[in-house]
Length: 413
Image (cartoon, rainbow, N blue to C red; front, side, top):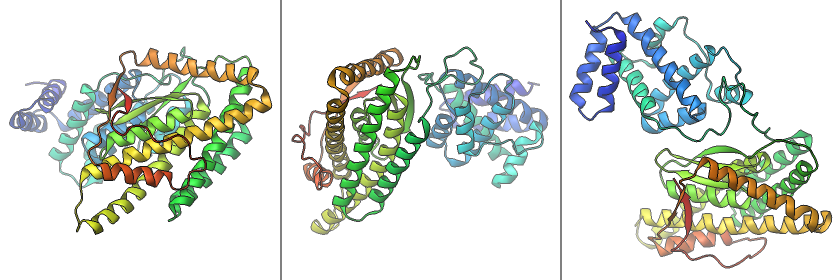
């Protein structure tokens, strides 16, 4: 009779295939073909080992939780978080602080008393029978075994010789600035007046741009070995392309580069630590604001057209919003750079900014040598114009005219 390892291997292979009946037969064999504690312990070990391999191939805890949620749902994602906790428990080498911070954010902890009892204990917590719990575990393992390597943005656990990742945010001044930005963006999200939201967001970008310049000048005057880092931001459906465009526009306004991995549901942003933190804050807030503006625009359209709604309208609205917001954010950054150059002197500031931008581009070329560009298509002119208007109502600086709605390049893997 096959042992637990063989049964699990066959069940995972069937789960990765297209024959549903074969997958169910292999799952039945897994239930009855070996002692339950043996199967459960081996299955958890296989999951932990696979997650460890994925960590070395660029997958961070939040990435794994996100992809399992995206592909399999919330319940298997909770199982994946438990596997991450077991993987952390078993680490003998160094574990970076950012890894533990992500685990804490996910609520990962080893709550079960012994690995041989994990799966039945998890099934009890979830209110599942044994075969359903086994199916969830096999599905998570099958998904994990099929995930490709991705860019290694930070040294994973055990990478003792890897260079340390740049610190996020430095000192009390940075913390105070970020708190001010968060407060401004919170007000922008909560107001029902689009003009006020735009003004508050513009002010937040001004603060961010000034802080970025300050960080650049401080780094230029110190002997540092930092290199640009990276973060991954979720760009899941619906309207994944519009979300990726919004990330790209916010990134470009903050001296970062962005690459969309549409099949994996995220966009990778590369840049310097302070700029990356700004992109995360702005993207999260602007996505809330863009969605609220889209819903208002959709409601007005439905009242005019007797309830008619099209996906093309929503997507065109969000694409136009992203592009116009990007123009305004870049205008705020350029204005902050101009004023900083007047104070510090262009001969001092401009070479520093140019060197930092070049370092980010080099990082992009190293991590994503095969990146391509892809063009947006506009399917609803009314949605495009409404989105542009929503993003342009209270511009602090009118800025240049909006770009062509039909030929907008964007990086894509």
